[in-house]
Image 1 (spheres, one colour):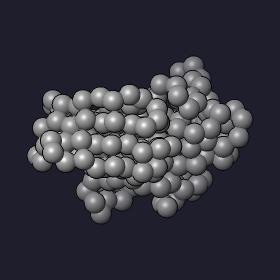
Image 2: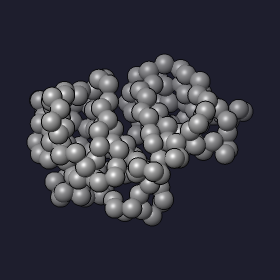
Image 3: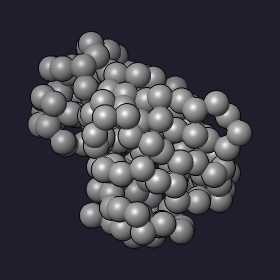
Image 4: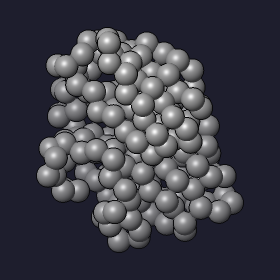
Length: 181
């Protein structure tokens, strides 16, 4: 667990680069957090963020001057600049969120919810991270198969494989593409 930058809670880091990076010097970071109370988000200048609710009834985000947005398990994720003042209000109890952050000029990211089997080609992306929630997920790359259990993640590098297949047991699997800039 890592304390939030603003001191309002903690998060579970799933993956970060470079491996020994802190909250101030990462190139990219993927984490999950349990949000149990309303409050402001930490300020991350120079960071692009994407947030998805993966468990719970909902969260209303106010991002700068934009109209408030409601996120819940199964709704589309939302992306925003890490230095835009952002606050959250829970709609009905705590939630768990998935948070992807990339540093401007280093990486960009794209989050995809995987609900059925899909083939994945890296294209311009260098790294893929597959996160399995609420069931098992198989990842097939050539002759190799890996099974992810609930809460497991796999980091796949384009240098080691050109394509792979994701076979989720449930609709709560996520794919994060990371592309160097």
